Amino acid sequence: MAIHIGICELKNQASRIVRAVREEAAEYIITIHGEPVAVLRPLTEAEQGQRQEQVDRFLAELDELAQRVTAEWKCDKTGVELLEEQRRG
Image (cartoon, rainbow, N blue to C red; front, top):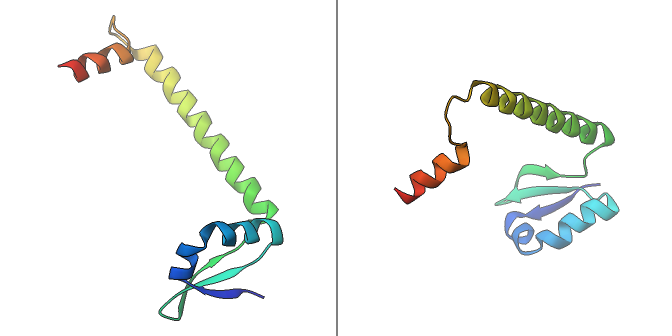
């Protein structure tokens, strides 16, 4: 059963509440002026797996982009050197 909690109480006790979600699988319905606006609950194993898949895809895309930039780089200076010049200038 989910526990109703106001946004102010959530703000003041965030660490304790998140710990209860993680350690006790507690669920909270977050309210503003008594109206439910969100649910705070542990991630399911499926959701955790989906999240990891998203992270893995993002990192693969980032790696691919880095390889493309490296392949097309036409300057004698590195990107870091160019940034340092910009910051000095």
